[in-house]
Length: 97
Image (cartoon, rainbow, N blue to C red; front, top):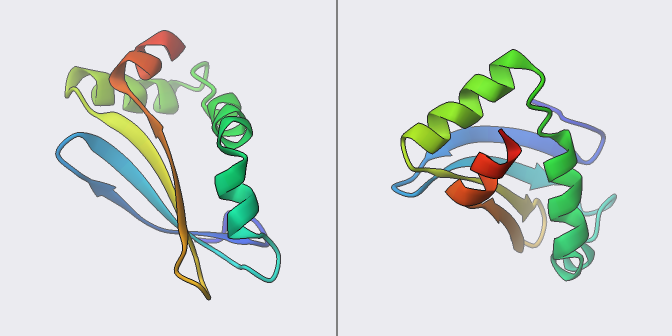
């Protein structure tokens, strides 16, 4: 599913300690090194999109916390295979609720 002109959501996976959104990045539009080098800004942008006033998102985050799972956004370059991952711990998710 295309998220925007450079980002495709490939799948949602559940790992032992977190739920992971797996994305592919079009590297002709976004530089993976820039994403990795701006971790704090990227994480803040993602955090801003986690609008807990939206009931379905709030329920999802509550379920993650209840199951003691963090939330991860994993981006992989479509050409290079390089990756960047932004992880929200259970404590960070609780703080959003």
